[in-house]
Length: 349
Ligand SMILES: Cc1cc2nc3c(=O)[nH]c(=O)nc-3n(C[C@H](O)[C@H](O)[C@H](O)COP(=O)(O)O)c2cc1C
Image 1: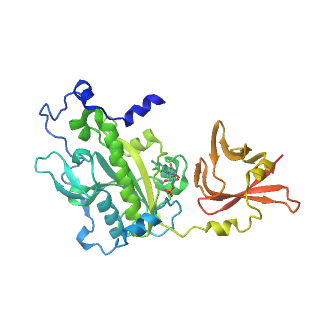
Image 2: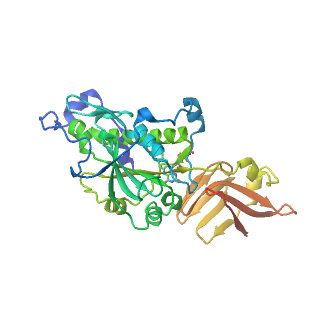
Image 3: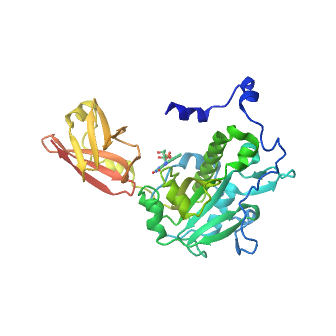
């Protein structure tokens, strides 16, 4: 595992010349394309230009304070203006460098190489057929690629069964085209690409927040199956992150959820609850040394019993509540799922 950490390192200047090979840029290889090509006669769909946006005026501090991952969306479609705004905020092109060696966008990128492409699985956006699209950022347009059979179910499955992903009206899927960065930065590229991706993802979070939409980064997806669905040449391009987007309903307030809890949970009470809570033998909750532990097969994780939203395989849980019998004995544990449903887990002695 520690081997993988080196990916996050940079270098000392003394090492640089010894380790970093001559780049294709230094060898005078022409720069790569900074946008994937497509057949010239492809019909392109115009998006709303940024000068015409009437949305997205929320003060910055409000965005920063309200940003959170949102996983529950209404069935309402998104508007073309909202989609245009999100694409512009995450990958909009301001100008191509005169040297042809990079692109200036609304987000920064190491060496202006912008090694990412934005694919969209559209389920419900006003005026657009459902299907797979790619953002043609140089001209702020959309390219329709293909329809996807049973897109909602397929995308849910391809995100490790996180069903809320598939049923979102819109799913951003970013791919990396590493050579754009490697052309200059060779072996140093991969950390830069990861940073570029994080920046783009945060831009999506904040721009969603600005127009009352919700999103969540999804790191758990089926790599090979999604690459195949998108017909990618995986030697040169592959999916690196996805993010569903939708309109959200205000979630159940945690104070409301906890008002039925009769007691404060102290380590002593947790100790008394020692035991196993099971649902379909899939997820177990154990109490050990005063900690609440989530267990799925061999995987164990300590949970914060109150506020954390944890990804637990089949479902996400926003909060847990302990309920006691009238005699003060442990009764059951109630889980508030990401979908705002309450599920009871039986106490097993
Ligand atoms: C790289 C990355 C991958 C993530 N993958 C998932 C995921 O697969 N499923 C999920 O429900 N949340 C996922 N998240 C969201 C985190 O769980 C969430 O950001 C974290 O719990 C903090 O909550 P907040 O975003 O509401 O502040 C991911 C976040 C990041 C940055």
